[in-house]
Image 1 (cartoon, rainbow, N blue to C red):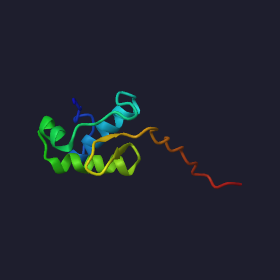
Image 2 (cartoon, rainbow, N blue to C red):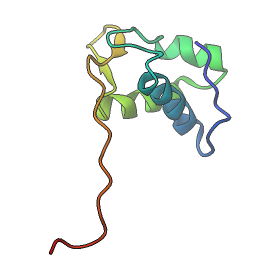
Image 3 (cartoon, helix red, strand yellow):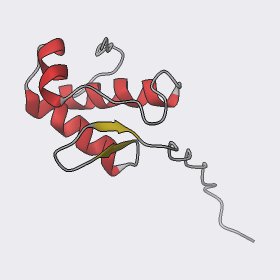
Length: 92
């Protein structure tokens, strides 16, 4: 899997997270699509497995990925909705 880790800055796990999230939001990884194992993706990217695990855990916590115990990790069926912008003005 090719991920562009140079589009964002910050810790490496956040770069992996943003790259995967962008692919999911853009529809390049559709619902129920299996993502590579943490070991395989870490090897492909040349990063530690912990880096990929942190990114997967964050995506799962936000509802983008579904992980089954001792099973494959895949894209969730319905991506979470985007948060609406909140007005800074108090209601009248």
